[in-house]
Length: 57
Image (cartoon, rainbow, N blue to C red; front, side, top):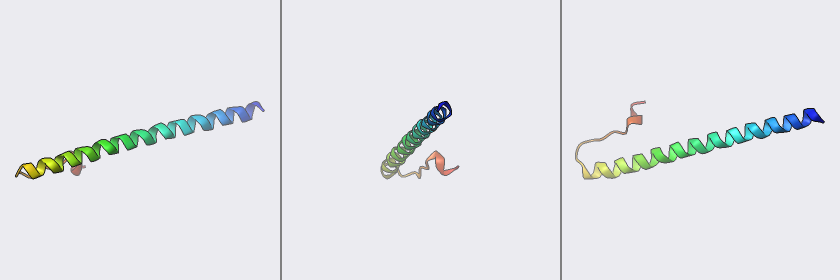
């Protein structure tokens, strides 16, 4: 009985960690997307070609 409850706690912790990691990934992707959109709008106003920093990576 005790072993089973520990296993359930462990799986719950893993799921919480996965959820937070996924949300962080989504947040970073969203900011990158907004940054890309901003640069695209900025590029139309400016004649010089501008490249986002993650194009280098």
